[in-house]
Image: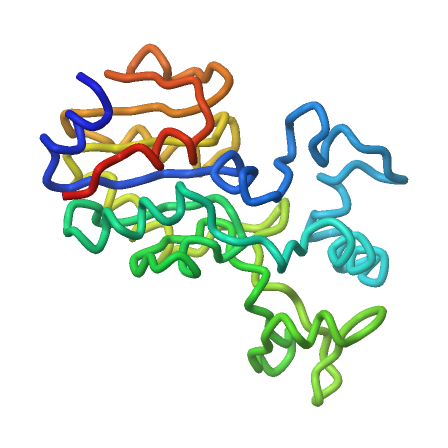
Length: 236
């Protein structure tokens, strides 16, 4: 079956996406040749983006974070738009994303489980007051709350656990859908990649430029750009 035929045959679709969904919006991924992990810094990105580094080198964390993690001029691409349209049609029940860029919501998606949080949400570690992205952009060094506490981005750093409510929502969505479309992810980052094991539906589709360990389980594997593939879908 083609992707269009699978979508036409589906009543309950869930989309699970990674960094490859946003690369066509100009946001680089981590593991490609020119990705974040292949650039040179004093410490590996995994170290800089860890909970321990944030707590012990907060100013250095924010220098890297502002420089490499914020792509606020990025716009939704054809993948984000197609998914929002698919949700509006009633077929797509949820988007599960490993990205922190808010592009799915910007495109119009309503049910989005952000496994790794969002750069647009920030909070005081002491009083828990919420702040928008402007607080990070309009400050230098370590941003602080009016109470004096350090402000932390609402993103899941290395060594931190995923949000339990988000996990529950994502797993329930995958468990109850008849079609799971996985796109733009190598499925190597856990625990998120392990969520795929909860799928018991009929159609498993993988859209990714490179091979993944789940290819052998998929009904359809497409090795093209996510936006180009989803942009061809006709939403009825």
